[in-house]
Length: 203
Image 1 (cartoon, one colour):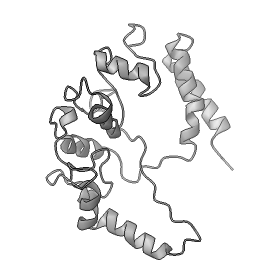
Image 2 (cartoon, helix red, strand yellow; image 1 turned 60 degrees about the horizontal axis):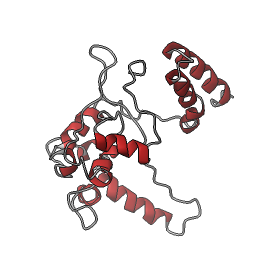
Image 3 (spheres, helix red, strand yellow; image 1 turned 45 degrees about the vertical axis):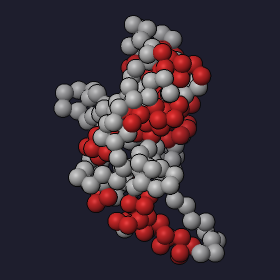
């Protein structure tokens, strides 16, 4: 892709990125589900022309999904009503009425909240969508696509504490690869060594 000049190098959803998306110069965005807010809110000229798909597999029979991001719920140690806060979170995450309120249609999201899916298996039922088809994706049933992809991610897959810091090594080395200074193999080898040396606490 890089050698053929097919990739776009621009700040994520910055003016240049948006311009290439609207012009049709950039037509494939390998990103997480929450990218769907872009055709719904940021791409008025091409809204409705986009669609979501599972990622390409790197090898035959390989996974066509990935984990990118997630959500955190923090209760401060000295919270005045920490127990109540936990009960509220428990209701929103595990009670059918609660997760329907989070993802289902409401005053803020008339068609439901469609930039993520629940991690709780009973809530992530392919037969019971919590949000509707998305006009910005041409009326696509993103719920089914996202649930199928999510089912390929191993349960309790951890995201390491050093994950956010890896961009200083992997991200920088990928940029050097795009410039022709490193091969993909060198990116993997060098980034692995730098991440292990500089970020991973082995004590």
